[in-house]
Every structure is written in C-alpha cells, then in structure tokens.
Length: 404
Ligand SMILES: Cc1ncc(COP(=O)(O)O)c(C=O)c1O
Image (tube, rainbow, N blue to C red; front, side, top):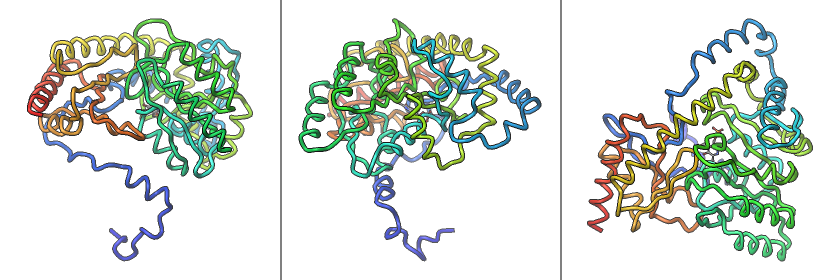
C-alpha cells in the first residue's frame, strides 16, 4: 500500500530525515547470476561459531531463561558487562568494571548513544575523511555537522586538526566529539602509530574534546604489535571507546558495547529509549565467552583472515601491478586501492556487469570527495573465488583506464 500519494510526506519529514534520504545514494541495480562481493565489510560465514552458540542458547534458555527473557535495563546484562570488563581490562592495561560498560545494539548504536548524549543540533564533529559512511549518517541524524580531516599514511592531519580546533575556539564554538577509527581504518586500512595517537590526544585534552574511538576491527590484527588505544593512553579519561561482536562473531547478533568513564556511561544510559539490548543474546554471548570459546575463536579468526589477506594481496600484486597502488593493512577487512585517474564509479559499474561488486571510494568522503579509490573487502569472498574476482576487476580497470 502506498499512502504517500494521498498524503505527501515531504512537508512532514524532519530536516534530518530529508537530508539522510538524499544521502542514501542511488546504488546499483542488483546483478543477475553469481556475484563476487568485494564490497561488504562483513565476516565470512565460514567463521560463524554455530555449534558453540547453539549450545550456549540451549544452556541459557534452560538454566537462565527466567532472566534472559525479561527486560534487562539500559546498561545491559551485568554478566556480559562483567566478563567484557575482565577481558578488556587485560587488553587495555586498566582496571575496569561493569560500570565502565553499556551493552548496545552493535557499535553503531554505541556511536548513536554518544551523539545523543553530547551533541546539540549544528554542533561540529571532527572525523577522518574518508571514513565509514554509516557513522557520518549517525552524526547527521543528530543534526550535527562534520569536518573531515584528510589522512596521510599514518592517519589524520594533526596540523589541520589543531587549526580547526583553534578556529572553533576563537569563534566561541566548543567541539565536543572527535570520531576516529585508529586500527585498520574503514575504508583505508590505515593504523595510526603511537606518536600520531599521542598528538591527537594532546590536542583533544587541550581543547576539552571527547575522542570517540571506534575499534570495530581492532581484535583482528594479523601482524605486528598492537598500538595502545586512545582509551588506554588517556587512562580511560575523555575517551569513549566503541566495541562490537559484529566482525568477530557475527553482525546478526547486533551486539556491541560502549566503554567509558562511569559518568559518561550514565549520561548515555539515561538517554536509552529502546528498553535496552537483547538480554537473551547478551546471556548467550556471556555463556559463550565464559566457556573460553571466544578467545579460541579470535585466534582462529586471526589466522583465517590473515590467510585471506595474504592471498588477496598476492593476487593484487599479480593482477594490478602498474595499474593501481595500495598498502597492505596490518589487520581488519579492507584494502584501499588508488587508481591513476578518476574512475571509481565507472570501474565499480563495469565490474558489476562482470559479476564483481566493489565500493567506489567517493562514498566514504564527507567533503572534497575524491574519485580515485576503490574500497576492496577481502573478508567475505570465498578463498576459491578470490582469483577470479581480482582478475576480472583488474581486466575491467585496465580496459577503462587505458581508454581514459
Ligand atoms: C568502522 C565501523 N564502525 C562500526 C561498524 C558497525 O558495526 P556494528 O555492526 O557493531 O554496528 C562498522 C561496520 O562495518 C565499521 O566498519
């Protein structure tokens, strides 16, 4: 039923709804036949721990069903917060407790909660440019503005960050939130080194900004030592860190968390309007973690995705030599391919006709969109299909780029 014809909704929609509707983009027509997806930053279903989760479901329903099927409150199931606090304390090197955590419907909702608690309409948020478009949508959904900081190979331009903060300060504007993805950034795969993190943190503390640290991929590191997080470097002060089970277990759980000082957690919890995150799923994941499965699963995932990354990089070297540039990511799901000229949409469209789906890079920019990048995800595509997909994509790119 389409009631819009009877009552046009244009005059009813909030400004943010109109803006986000325009922001959705045209997208491509769904392709016919088999499609190799290098577009989606999602896990390979071969990694889903189906057996262990079904056992945990059964145990939870039979042993804890009376609690697990009730409402759980805005902070989320204390059992999961306890177990997460213990695990994260070890990783961050800080003594954390359940009071430092709120369970959310994925880290997307964790960012939404931070925006809800700290942003007024028209507030300015500083983020990487390019960045994850759904995070931009979340900020825009709060009627806030985004300034996108360009990136070099080590992350955001700190000089520019200082300039923007200084200018805002001069004009009497308080920048409250800085949104960064310092590990294996989506879409570039960049990891900020320690010095860059420290410089950003110094500026954030000088200007009284909260850093929102999105660490959706942080656990999936395939080489080298982990760099201390903003949260850890700041001793947990002035940083809101977002975490998720989406990349390590599965996004269908819609289970994530926000880690921060208790005062900040309380401010975000006070604004929950959704009656909390599923207690049932939270109990199940807590039981799964308590049995030690998660730790083993992470180890297995790291070696699985390291294998995928390595094969993908060797295929890029074989097929894209002399056509494009890229850097090997130390973890996460993405390679950011730089083309010699502006052809991201054209290559993406033509590749789709050949059954290969990629994300044109312009979609990841909040301003000054560049059209010379493709974001390639190696996480989802089956090992056996990688060679065909990369070879087809390279053939399309070579043809279009030599013609332009
Ligand atoms: C940088 C980043 N943050 C957050 C998310 C969303 O995660 P979740 O499923 O936990 O909401 C993604 C998913 O692609 C992501 O790439």
